[in-house]
Length: 373
Image (cartoon, rainbow, N blue to C red; front, top):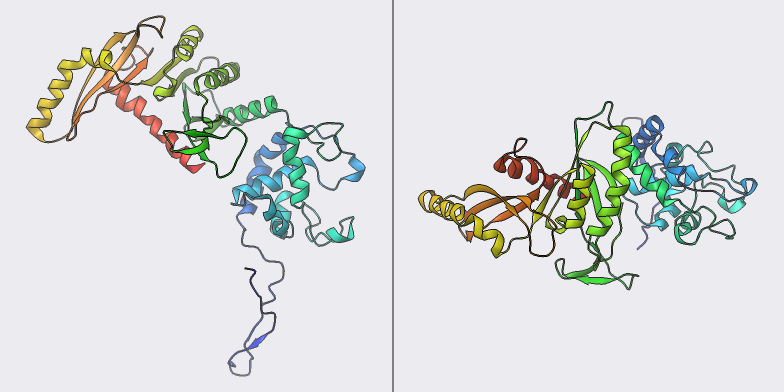
């Protein structure tokens, strides 16, 4: 329901000889002053201007009022401020602070070409919608959707933004791979039910390094992340090595990524990996003694007990070689809780307990970053 604003002045109690009135005509005001900081940050680092290079603009320059960079800046800043929907821009387009942050010189919009647009310094939802739809329908011969993106350039852009955060070459880069769920509420294309999340959803693949987003791929819920992760790796690693050839690279992920395709590729390319491994009877057999030891400690102390072990392991059909497996033989109040990870990181660098607790468990930080998404 639309708010009914009272534009009449209200006379309140006097203060000496002075009148006290309430005037509800606020004029040009904003509740999004934080966008000024976004504008200052982007002016310093040029992130959106570099992002604009990922698009080709086939529009007639004599017939447009907003550059691709201005359109992208408006849209990116609005999303950062919490305005996800395009129809929010019917109101945001008259916000003078957004206009200043986007770099619009005519912050009142009085100089717009069309009479109906005057007083609105920024683009509306229809103009921005044509930009977004161009991702699928755009091209030089299209009438309305003439700003198609280059997805290869977009992928490279994300990696370069990440690499530019380093002033000097780091000794080590750890890339965390994981998927999450994006719940669907309609009959979207590629809609599938996912049993783990118990909903119809997409399952995008994210790659983070610490707090930095490095890559993202949209996946449908029936898609295994292994093959998409393989192609992401083939794209990411050459870019990282071209910038930092001496930097050690570690790939980290849960059991959904512990596949021979990824491990064999990492081994060929000299990349270290650390993946979770789903438990089974063959994996639990070599740790029968550590599990019993953990159980005895639990009975003695009443506290959760852990014993770490390692061994070489090869599934009957799915791997082409034996690999180093670290086992956490844990006993909790609910009973035994064994966990496994597979790695090609040498014992000289990480003993079993340190590898599991100090390296593998740190991937939990990525899950916090995904929640922020």
